Each structure stands twice: as C-alpha cells, then as structure tokens.
Image (cartoon, rainbow, N blue to C red; front, top):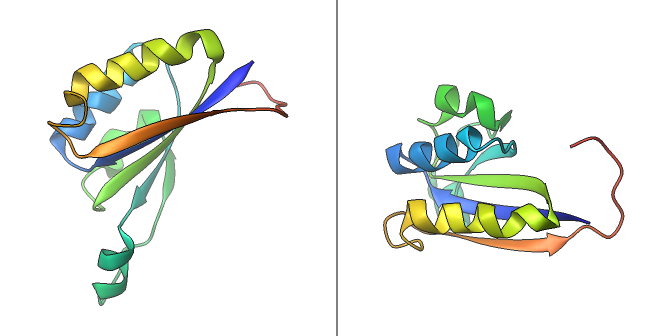
Length: 111
C-alpha cells in the first residue's frame, strides 16, 4: 500500500539540509513554497507560489516563508522517512514545522 507524507518546514538552510538528506536516501517528492495565512494577507506583494521537484529545491529554496512537501512512499518505507526527518529536525526543535501521513486508498501511477 502507498502512503502520503505531508511535511511543512520553515524555509532556510536547515530545510535545505533536510531535503538534501531525503533526496540522498533515494526519495523524491513535490515541494511548494508557502506562507502562513497571516503573512499571506499582510504581504503587499505576495510572491508567486511555485511547485517544483525535490531535485530542484536548491534553485528555489531562497523564496517563501515555509516549504510544503508531499511524498508518496511504500508503506514499509514510511517509518524510515519519518525517522530521517525527526533526526534532521531534532523532532522539529531545530526547524519549525510538522508532518503527518495518510494511506492512499485509491492509487494509480508510477511513483
């Protein structure tokens, strides 16, 4: 069965390190630059939100308040991916953020 892991991290060099480790371990995902509702509404000139692959993160990471990542993984790999994120973020004490996962009930595709 496939699982979806949702990860939100405060953007910056520490987040770059987390995503580099995830990519180095062979995972791929989709990233989006995001902002909190408060910051999005207070900003006079909000930046465009872009979707991009994990491999392209280093080209785009300098924009946006936070990064939202979406990973589709086999259920037996989910625990390892979550543990890697916990270690790299010091259980979200070193980098603000959070993660949660869901089972994919209806899945078709090659990732």
